[in-house]
Image (cartoon, rainbow, N blue to C red):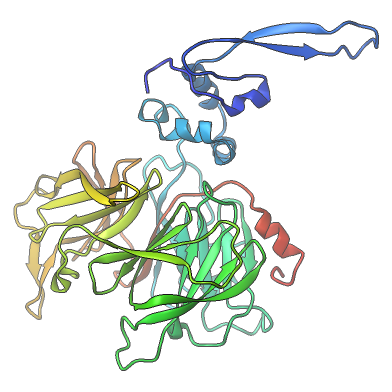
Length: 429
C-alpha cells in the first residue's frame, strides 16, 4: 500500500468521516440546532481523510480500545496488518502460554518484548482456577478442564472456556462420561469469521496402542445454541495434537501421515451431518522416523495456513504458505539460517540412548510479527528468533523442562455474547 493512499469505505464514517479510494471527496453533515426549534440547519463540510491521517488518529488510542475497534471493523484490521502502517499502531501483547506437568501448576505467559500490560493468564477470575489444566488455545480464548476436582461443581462439566483479556468465562455442558484419556478436545474460534466458538470432542476408540488411537466419531459444542451435536468422520484418523481454525476450517495434523485434515464448518450450522473434509499433504520431510528430530509446526498468517520445519541437520528452517483455493500449493516464504543464529555449525546431538536430536524445536511462529519461538534442548530455554534480522535472543527459561502444554497466545479484547448468554443458563455459576 502506498503512503497517503485512501481505503474505503472505512468505519470512521461512524465519527463523521469516510474514505474513498483514489480521490478526496466532501461530506455534508447536517446539524440541527438545539437551542431554538426554529433555528435553520447548519451545513458543515469536512474533507475525507487519507490513510496516514487515519493511522495517526488510531495510533493515539489506548491499546484496549484499538483492539476492540479493529475486531469489528475490517478496514481498521487491515491497517494493523499493513507493513507500512502497523509499526505506528498499538501492538497487541503476545507470547507463549505454558504449564508444567505438576499437579495444580499455574498457567504462565512468556511475553514477547514490548508486549504491553499484564493479562491474567493464571485465570484467577475463574472459580477454583488453581485446579485448571490448559487444553487448547484459539485466537485469544482458552479451553481448560478441572483436573482431579469435582467436589465444588458436581452438576457442571469439567471443561471451561474463558477469555483472559476480558475475564469472561463459561462452563461447557455435560457430554458422555469418560476419562480424560478417552477423548481429544480442540477449541475453534476465529473472530473474523464468526463471533461464536466451537469445541470439538473427538472420541478415541479402544485400541491396544495407547498412542495415536484412530478416531471416527466426535461431538461439537456450539456457543450459538450452547448444545453438543454428534457427528462422524468419513475415515479414521489419528491426531498429532496441534490444530488451527481459520475462516471456518479446522486444520489438524495427522499423527503418522505427513498431512493435515481440513474440516469445514458452516457458520450457522447446528446439524449433525458429516462435515466437509479433505486431506492436504504437508511439505518438507514426510518420513515418520524424522518426526521427532524435525517435527514441523502449523500456524496461520493473515488468514492463511502456514507450515514450518527445520531440515535434517537443523542448520536451516523453511516456512511455507498454502496458496490457491483449488490447487492448494505450498510456496516457500522464508529459508532461515540457524547456523548464524546459534553461532555454531553443528546443531545435532546424541542422547544417552544413541538417538540423534536437533538442539532446538519449533514452538510457534508468527509471520505478521516476523518471529519464531523455539525451545532449546538441554537448557530448555524459550528462544525468540527474528525473521527480519536473523538474530536469536532469550525469551524465558521455565523453572522445569517438564512442560505439559505450550500455546501461542494473542489476546482478544472484545466481549462475546456467548458468555453473556451462559449467565442466563446453568453454564455459569
